[in-house]
Length: 151
Image (cartoon, rainbow, N blue to C red; front, top):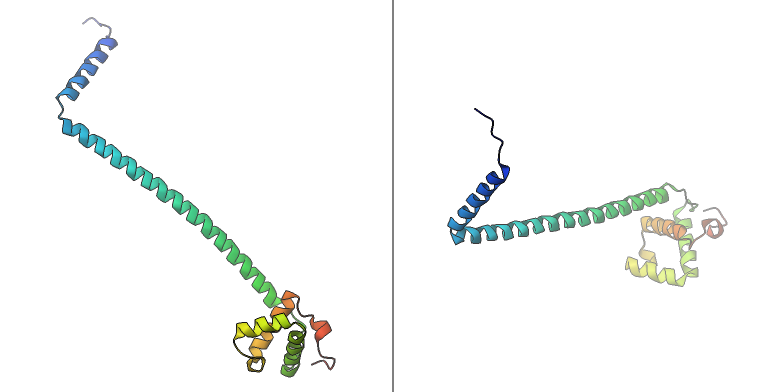
């Protein structure tokens, strides 16, 4: 058998003719359905992209939130680790807070308003916490404001 060279142009023409004939013989509903399927696929793809983008935005926001929380926890640990020069006795701490608040009227009003109680109702724990807060805020200088008798 002699080897006859392939006629690629003829093969391509036959393929195109077959495709054209197949398209012409197909019912119109097939094309309508194909178009609807393509629209659904595009809508689904758009929804998938939207979902991925929203997840990315959420992840970035959560990373910022986690970072802020970590910074807050570090700062809180630093504050708690500090040794503040606060009088050792209960009476000394109360006098120190009273002197600090009498000097700083705005701070006294804010503290008492936030606590929803008057000064005499503050617990020892409240006083300790307020003294530490005032020291950290720079409102109170324990070395300058502490009792002369060392309490």
